[in-house]
Amino acid sequence: MSELRVYEEDIFRAGQVVPLSPILVTIPDAAAMIGRGATFIYAAISNGVIQAVKSDKRTLVVVKSLQDYVASLPPPKMRPVPKRDPLPVRQGRQARRK
Image (cartoon, rainbow, N blue to C red; front, side, top):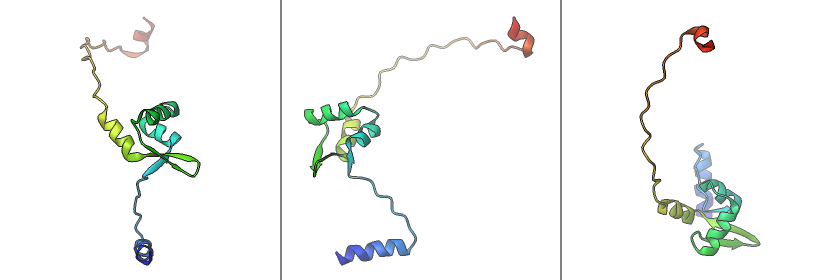
């Protein structure tokens, strides 16, 4: 444990900010991370698609399982946008009134 404290002191002494990625997030945070609602997160947990753990009374979602879920999604199927003729360029206010 003293090694960890020395490590933290060394980081702060050097004036560096070490970004830490969360390992667990709350249900609302998990929903915001993947752009879905909390209801979807609860359904995905109960279906085993996303992993969650309990900490006291809180349900926390494992971030790695969110990343795995997103990686498993198929790419979008989009039709190509048809080419259109360019719009004619109007000149000044008089062209707008016509």
